[in-house]
Length: 256
Ligand code: PGA
Image 1 (tube, rainbow, N blue to C red):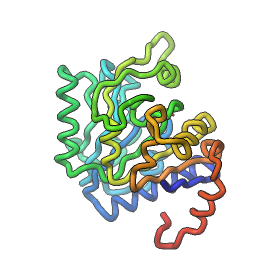
Image 2 (cartoon, rainbow, N blue to C red):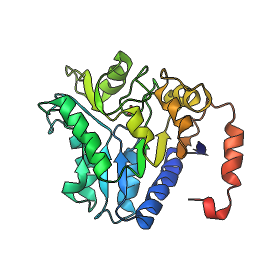
Image 3 (cartoon, protein in one colour):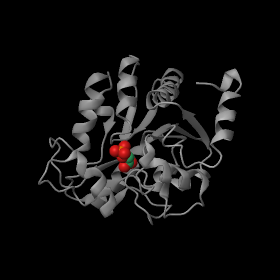
Image 4 (cartoon, protein in one colour):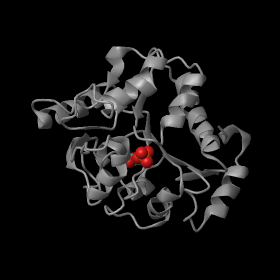
């Protein structure tokens, strides 16, 4: 794991954006896994401002609420179109987001996995982290070998996400999410976390034991993970000074 700690959210975002920009320059037909939530918003704004060529890129989103109409402001379809896709030149037919209204959800999930395989696999997966350590919507105790499937959200995640929904609206309890096994097959994972409310989850994921109680901790077993943090999200890390020292001493050819 490469832990990149920056003073501000924007500085950490800029590092993440440069990693993605480099991938798109080196591999114009890259397969990119995308995330939703408040964390990647600044990343998407930065990527939009970089005016990259997405015309040959294929995207796969991590997750979607079950039963929320696509046009609902909080559906992840709506989120992705509003915050990224309508601002870049990605081809509509290359965009994949789980269908939370699929008639046969288990079948849809199997087909989603098949589509990822058929695309050649995900080159880089963008990840946020829940305050409970989830990646995608793989909640604590998710199988570390899981594939795309239906999950029930924890009450904590429902509470965390209630801020996006109107008063009187209920956060859906069920979602489709790529599995942890699916995420682990991405060639590269790029985890972003900002703010002190993520510090505990990040400390457990980076320096704690590998355990399904903190699903993000499985990333310790992945050969290529970069974790972009602002100072508050890095606040619980015991070895933060070492991670800063490593980043400051990177040889020029390794920097982004
Ligand atoms: P957030 O969610 O970016 O809205 O904090 C992250 C997540 O739940 O993965």
